[in-house]
Image: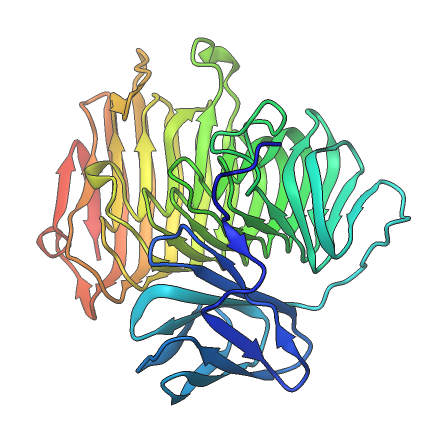
Length: 443
């Protein structure tokens, strides 16, 4: 495999040292991120633990951002702190009220049913470094990355496979694969096509060369406690779910330089009669951070027979960018290809820092250089809900509901209990809402 011309990570980060009365945790450092080296550590949580944190610079403040975890940090002096973690969760240790030089701590819940390398149907990687190349998985197989394993390569699940599992507390790392991939690596870090009963749990996906998970035509999937750490150039979406049904994404941490979670329709453009549905997808309990494009998104490619019953809920967003201007949003529904998009819900979401638009729903004839597909019957977005969303800090940018014409309308949008910088928003003017061919209510 081709080695990159720079080192994207180091086993021990220089920025932080983290230890408790048991041992010192390995703090990994991954360079190339906006805001400096991304540092992170993980461990198996079994009881409340207090860590001594040494910081290789002087700071004046420290805090913890999480979604549903329980932790607190206390600064002892400008270079030392205590961090107490009371339960499993994903924690961002933030210093001086800025997101630069972040430290992430992943307290994993106790691991159950740990396999051995002699179990049937297992691809087992123990602690240490492994040059695995492209790992192929078939029906009934499990890829297991033990804690301490760093596996360089990519994963491809064979088409039409079923009952496939990827799990473990190790790291799947793409540092040796150039951006966009190679013939050997394939076009996705973890590629899935037509898989029934997929399970991905606990693993860390680091430094992807393309989309981290490209999951097309999944029927029944659970993606839980996965950590995505990727910020190469662009088009490195975190979790991309395409023309799939019955998928649950929960308790993940995702930092990318593109969409954190994006749901798409990518069926054959020239054969609309063969398009399959995208429906019944739930994303919940995640801690998210995007430095480019959207955070939670439906679209922009929508080549599906219908897109429906999509729920994003109970998530915390550390930061959302403004790098793509008026075609992106923290929460977005984008329609490039005519279809029916309905029953999309964003609810109980906290945004710590917003640099772009809070939400953006629209039809488009082009997305960058990608042309849209206009069909005689047109398209519609309906029953879109934004409920119980709080922005703690950020710029007062616009929100958008933009249909194209009478054949491409947005209707029955419910905007409920939006709080921006401590103030509840009750009017289009306060929300800075721009509309065209759209029907909505604000309460």
